[in-house]
Picture (spheres, rainbow, N blue to C red):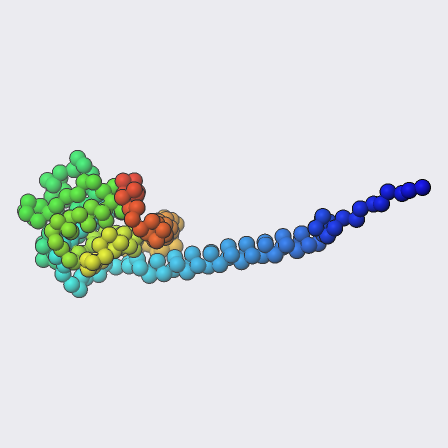
Amino acid sequence: MWTRATETPTGADKPAAPGRLMSTYLRLRRIAIFSLAGIAVALFAGFLWFLTRVPQEEMALADNAEGIVVLTGGSSRIADAVELLASGRGRRLLITGVYPRTSSGELARLVPSHQPLFACCVDLGHTARNTIGNAIETRQWVRERGFRSLVVVTSAYHMPRAMAEFAHQLPDVTLIEFPVVSDKRRAEPWWHATTARLLISEYLKYLLAKVRMALAPHADELFGGRPDTDG
C-alpha cells in the first residue's frame, strides 16, 4: 500500500515568526520616534535662531545706499522709508506692493511734511502681491535705475524672509536692513499668544521660502502672483 508523501514547506514559504514581526515593528517605531524628535529639535533650534534675527528695537543705519525699497503692509513702514529718503539715506524710493487703485497723492498724505518728495523721488510698484512679488518688482526697478546698493524697509518679524527673497533676486546688490518695530512688538514678549502665533507663522513661511529657493531656484515667477499676509 502506497502512502502519499507530505511536502515540507521550504524556509522561503514559512510564515514569518510573530516575534520577528514584532521586533521589526518596534525597531521601525523607534526609528520613526527618533526621527520625529530630531526634526522637532531642529525646528525649535531654528526658531530660536529666527528670534535672534527679529529685533525688538529699531536700529540706526550705518551706511547709505543708492536706493530704498519699502514693502507695504505695516502702518508705519512707508513713513519710516520716506524719512530715510528725506535724510539722504538713498537717492530714490520704491514703494512695492501698492494697491492698484492707490495713487501717489494718497500715500503722500501719510507724510505731509515730505509730500514734495513724492513728485521727484518716489516710485510706486503696483504688481507685487506677496514677498516674492516684492522682490521681483524691486529687481526690475533696481536694474532700470542701475543701483548697486539698497536699503530694505519692512516689519522686523518679516525681515528675515524679505531679505532671503531679495538676496535671491538681487545677488549682486548690497542689501541693508532697516526693520520697523511696532509699539506692540516692543511691549509684548515673543511668547505672548498673539505675537508667538505671528512669529511661528513667519518662521514657517521663511523655511518654506528657503526650501523653494533650493529646489526650484528659477520658478519664482510662478509664486509671485499669489497674495500672502506679512503685516
